[in-house]
Image (cartoon, rainbow over the protein chains, first blue to last red):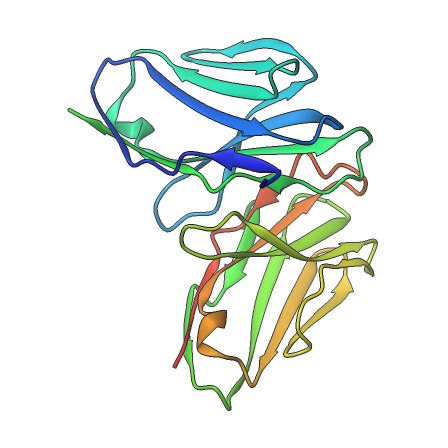
Length: 112
Length: 113
């Protein structure tokens, strides 16, 4: 079993839709959960950062972590064409020096 | 320049060539990383440097040779590569010990013929 599983998509939605992106993981030691957004021909940029379980909201974006199910989600409300990108989940263990383990990324297209 | 910059953005090389990738960070960070991003695979961490010292080598073949002359610059020297080494090579930086908050450069798209 891979440490982090992420459906690569592609996912295509109409503008204004609510998008749900998900990752599952197997390592119960993971404590830090990140979502990166990567536009075509660019490097990943950190979008959301959550520690342990719970929700975190930032504008149209909400990150959820369910450690009991080893499942994390990123919700995008009122999706825009500018949200079209590949979304990568990443996670790491306790302590600031644990390396990040990434999912494969989900490619999202928001159609106007 | 701001953030993390990488040059060249695109590189085509033959299997017998020697080339180098350059990364520079303008964020005052003291940790730098090389990643490999291949199609349909997760990002693979290759090397980590903290305060110019290599602290991680993720079983990378010796045909990849990193160099970190100071906390702002990172190089990846390439020689006798294989076609399967074709990928996007990403550089990232962070404060030392803070793996979780990495800032990435735009990457170098490498093609090995």
